[in-house]
Length: 89
Image 1 (cartoon, rainbow, N blue to C red):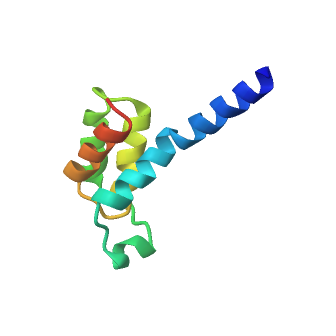
Image 2 (cartoon, rainbow, N blue to C red; image 1 turned 30 degrees about the vertical axis):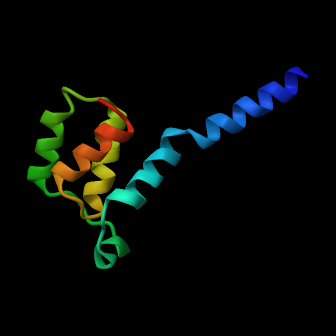
């Protein structure tokens, strides 16, 4: 009986994991052009500097998510707004 409760909790956590929510949110709300999705580009020096200053106020998870989205071609502002909604501050 205890193991069934644990199994149900684990399944529930998998459904509500931050990664799952992030991917669902991005699919619904963020439009990424097909061309930019093919290859990940490197961040420019100005983008890196901006993220470095930005990282003082936000978690590593928030910054990593922004960085990955920006490599995919999303703007800093869009990446920041999505990261706030999915990961938090």
